[in-house]
Length: 278
Image 1 (cartoon, rainbow, N blue to C red):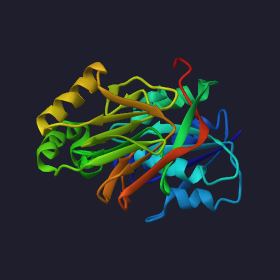
Image 2: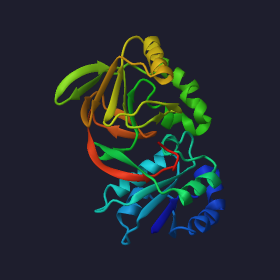
Image 3: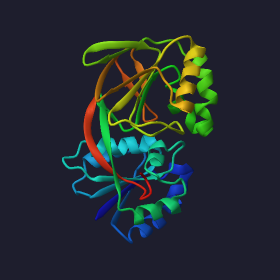
Image 4: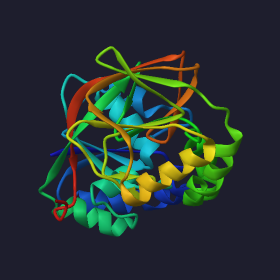
């Protein structure tokens, strides 16, 4: 099988560049491996779209934002290759959901031994895509503003700060063209691992809304992350949001919107996962 590795030489604080030859040589035991090093300002999505050669597997090395960019390119192709991940970011929620390890040696072993794939639905928000999580409202900007500086601690330390700093935004959620609620913080989840926590995954998108005073929203979020409890929960494959224009968080990266968000199921891709993954 033909496997293409796409990597940013600055990933992992430059450590990936030093390990790329070992990664290629190791995976060559099982695959016909090619490697592409992204040039400065080169976008993964654009590179994939303009490829003239077809590959059976695309392997991304990086964090969730890197994987989002890779999948965004794959979604534009006229065929559906499989996706592989070597986590090298801050939280690596997608990698964890596939049973991959932060230790590269252990992940390479998994990729060599795995005969198992995990089907994963990809969703489109306006002109962008998301794999596992979308967020809007209080603190939603936290991960893509602060995480690179503080690492995982940013989700907790900076997140609490932003809860009390951010202005309230009325997020109107529509499902099947019906207004189902107005919230101040909203998540759309398609994962069993979010912000470092294990969460329950549904066959459809899980939409969770929080509202109330800031401190009560923070407490409700904690109840969900620690115990899985939440009152306002919906399951759907498409939804619409009307809110103030600005930024939303898609897989940990910032995307702009003009006040309206339309989200819908786009396609299903297969990700190589740990043989031990249930």
